[in-house]
View 1 (cartoon, rainbow, N blue to C red):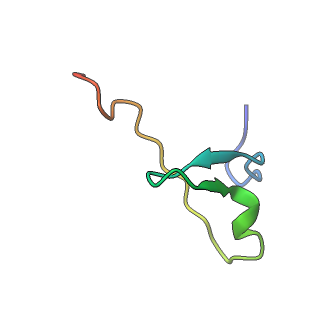
View 2: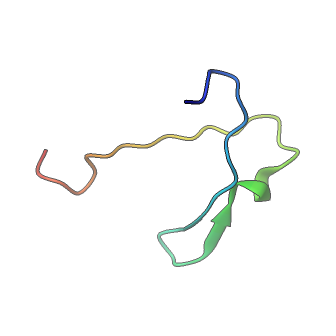
Length: 44
């Protein structure tokens, strides 16, 4: 289980326009915020 402050693992995902976005695209940026909301597009 990751701890607060641990680096996020590398990943690539599709944007809403179908383009690929990789976490490594932001390497060297001061901060990156990852936000997940699992109930999106669900009746919950």
